Amino acid sequence: MAIPFISAQEAAEHIKNGDNVGFSGFTASGTPKVVTEALAEKAIKEHEQGREFKINMFTGASTNDHVDGALARANAINRRTPYQSNADMRKRLNAHDAHYFDLHLSELAQKMRYGVFGKLDVAILEVADIDDNGDIVLGTGMGISPTIAMLADKVIIELNEALPKSIRGLHDVYIPADPPYRREIPIYKASDRIGTPILHVDPAKIVGIVKTNAKDGVKSFADLDETTMLIGANVCNFLLGELRAGRIPKSFLPMQSGVGNVANAVLHGLGEVAEIPQFDMYTEVIQDSVVDLMKKGKCRFASTCSMTFSDDMMDEVLANMDFFRDKILIRPGEISNHPEIVRRLGLITMNTALEADIFGNINSTHVLGTKMMNGIGGSGDFTRNGFLSIFSCPSVTKGGLISNIVPMVSHLDHSEHSVDALITDQGIADLRGKDPVQRAETIIENCVNPEYKQLLWDYLKLGKGGQTPHSLKAAFAFHTEFAESGDMRNTDWSKFA
Image (cartoon, rainbow, N blue to C red; front, side, top):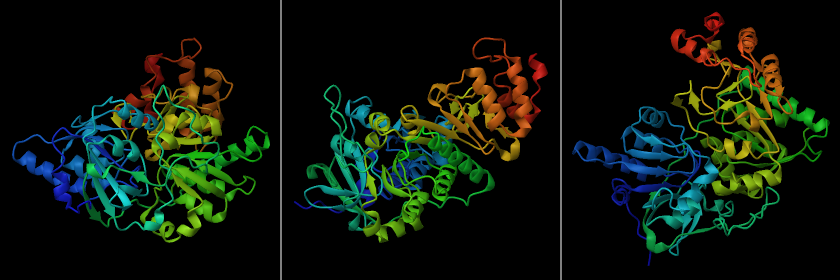
């Protein structure tokens, strides 16, 4: 029996108030485009009639404006996890119009299979191809697609005709056995295939296929500026030093890199250093810079959960599949981020901090400790289990009004136990083997912007002893000063003497 083609509006009628809904994709790529917009329109109409309409959203990671943006503007979200990066969604979360719980990306699929969040009512999957047997070629990001396709009572398919069928073969669909029956996940190098290129869905569960022709809308990153180039150069210099000292094997190690301009700068820098050998990537996201590294022959292979390319770069990659087919493999998020594999392969992990404190703790999620920015994403999955864990950030933001190195982080995502090195545009702080005071001295001397260096030296003197000499009265003075005057440089320690 042929699976029917339906409109986006017809598909949206299968989703009810209070439903748990799972979405394909990961960091924009591979996420639905039109059913979610029809669902937002339905929510608006329901609200106009005085009826409640909100769903619970489960995604691989962030989505795009078609999903998080449209549904947030319609106030159609009750509960949201595990990661987001949309401005409209962020406003809802911080206003408590939607309930958001931040979660390590590697954990979501297993928790869903154990029923932690209740049964899954609907899954919406973007696909490049499907047949009447329910055999699917997924799109450019996998996320939690295998798990939600298995769990959902109903499945809605978005067949994106902008994706060529030649994408078939890029995916490695695999669901590990759940504890206590799980065996080792047999990935011993980044390029190992362990699953199937096809996702099978029971066709009896598929309520219909909605045709689309929309792109993900990922924008190109801004040109590298002086700050990001300095950070990238400092990361490369640190890795070169480790390589020369023999603390990284001569054959190098697989790389993981987070998302954003700083991550792009770091990867760009790696491509410019001849002494760094060819390497593989085992990561959750590959960006435009990885394509450039592949074309240069620097990156041999990338295992990922998502091809989060700008629209122009995506067009280039999809048009040249003969070149990229043996260089990219797309996996589920619970495999791309799995701690077992991260530890086994010995990844060099590179992630971005919103702020760090002088003792090496990292805040990667909350502005001034209160307002959610995006979420922890996969940084914890990689950081805690990597061979070498690097965090980087600019030393200051907002033209120097904010120091990104503070006395105490206003929200803790990664403790000093998980951070090997902190790197800013100012320099490198190797924190390994140092006690808290030694870490503080290293970070202040090497990573802090000159406008804040003396302030932080003076803060360290305020401490009242102990292994970690914080001044409990003054620990958040940078943050409170910014809230009051708009400039952390105005901090006056004499108030706390």
